[in-house]
Length: 256
Image 1 (cartoon, one colour):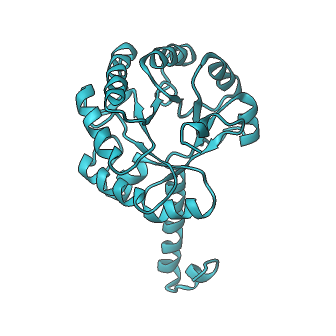
Image 2 (cartoon, rainbow, N blue to C red):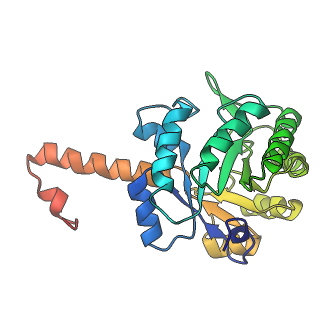
């Protein structure tokens, strides 16, 4: 089944977010249908803050390794595209396409001193150019477009999100990603307003998968929560080693 088709099933696509070869292999072994990278997890793994702080060449190295070690469709979190023009963004997508990726995420915010939402119409114009250039190059890459209206808690965020969905749909998006959206009424409203599959991200108060299916959500991803959780467990285990001056806690619930 193609990556595009996975967004059209009655049950949502559960996208496992990964950051290295090991996490990708685990996801494949457990039966996930597709994987996507987490920019925040990869950045943290390499010692950077999130927000395109790593070099694009470093990202490419990680993506090449992941893609070369899994048969699962892979979507890449490109943040804002590692470029500010459509030509720059398309060149970067073409580089990633050589590794056999199935999709990308592009977001409508940028990080300088802080994360800010870019003008929706300006972003839509860039997206339109990106889509056309990819079509001209005969590259079938699923464009999952992230809007950060809920991440940044902008004024009138529900209506602003609706407007941006309309803009990005006309510009050629294949899917819409709305991180930090978790309220059922808002999810239902935006799903009903959208012609495109809606992607929701893991949140503490997010409804369960069956409920999200009822609401019409087509893709559910994890962000960096798995990586953060794993890091917290590592910190706990190491603190026990230091506190107890023993490795016993490491082996208490492990497969070693």
